[in-house]
Amino acid sequence: MYLTNHSLTDYRNVASLRFLPDAGVNVICGDNGHGKTNLLESVFLLTGARSFRSGKDLSLVRRGCSFSIIDSGFFSEGREQSLRMTISEKGRSASLNKGTEKKAAALAGSFCCVVFSPEHLELIKGSPDARRRFLDTALCQVSPGYLAALKTYTRLLNQRNSLLKDSYSIGAAMELLEVYDEQFAAAAAAVTQARRKFTTELLPKAQESYRLISNGREQLYFRYLSTLFGEGPAEPEQALTALRDARGADQKSGFSTLGPHRDDLAVELDGESARQFGSQGQQRSAVLSLKLAESELMYDRLGERPVLLLDDVLSELDPNRQDYLIEKVIGSQAIITCCEPELVVRRADARVFRMENGALSAL
Image (cartoon, helix red, strand yellow):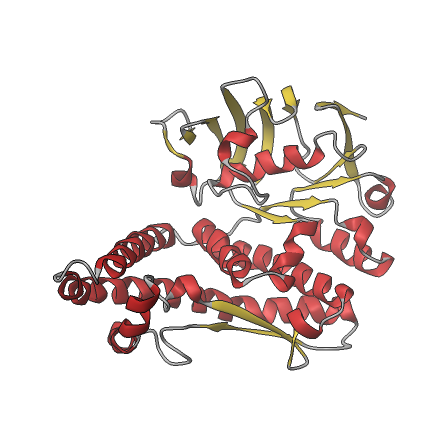
């Protein structure tokens, strides 16, 4: 899988841009603040996921404009395909291969990317929300039914929370909650099973990457922590029991205290929490290992390598880690942003572009 052409109109600081990447390694160089990350972000949006940066969809539209357009071509499943996305105050809509325009989320699985940016250190350092989002973003690309399962769960979660908030003023709310909990438990089981399976498949790949990056100095380990199912099978009946036991606490809180929306991915180095005890270098290596493992797992499941987006990460790695990362991206299409293209071109055959004030030029 690789991007063949990519055009932007009125996107962030870009008035108009056309990008014709090579199917191999591409380097986008230039000073900070000129739009390199904006370009990578726009490519990632083709997956149908939200931006890997903070902010609402409307912040993607160039100041003074009412909408943005992303118009792209990519090669996948043995043929050339096209994708067009419109971003406005109404959100993101898209059409694949000139078909009916739908919400951008419907693109999930059509075009696949793995992105690694300095912000992804939050995978280790940040809250459980960052780690849940990592799992969900990857699963939506590789598992066709996962997005639907996640949407069903989110809808039932919102409805359950509404009932909990009304439980003191509406007598029938608790009776309805019993009915909703059966559906909620089934949806929670589906999401948990998918996340656990993905985590189990991801672990050996991430461990091997970390072993090579760290020269075997410590061992990476992670496990999925479920608030509803513990370490046992994700069976709806088990979830129902846990939900009933927690109903008093839920009613008092006014929201659901258990479920996949509260789960976490515990990442450890030699048995200690990477978040609490890992050094900056160890945490960065753990994130890099997770991302490379995500790419390998996508390849296993899809039969095509995803596009790799590396946003200004090489300067934060030592030479050995730089060498390892560049070696791993060869064979996939990679789009790498950096201030010094020499970091890449002395290690790989790469096509180089320069971004300046939102304008892109080939070098």
